[in-house]
Length: 142
Image (tube, rainbow, N blue to C red):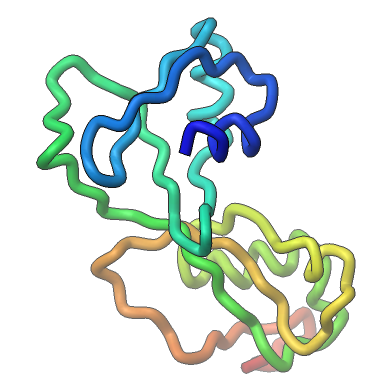
């Protein structure tokens, strides 16, 4: 995982990476600015699994730390091309959770069968099978 962290964050001042527990890593940074920048960038994906970024606290229990929100990729199928702008996609994805980013194929409109957006959601929430919204003419789009 050390190589993965260095690859995704490049030359961002990661000093050390240590395995603390199964799936839990502790990273030391060369500066406070590097740490803040990586925390602000938020969660990542590795091998189609979420990598949840949390700042370390003195009283943290690494064995009992709970995760209540995770990033997941959602697909919006059958979406008219006029809704493929980043702002529109983020607004639509916001009906499911907190939108984080669109994938490259979606942003470059290279695959028009579905739009794919990374969204942070509560692990306890119910996920909609479809999303409906009102367009600029008052028509309900499904």
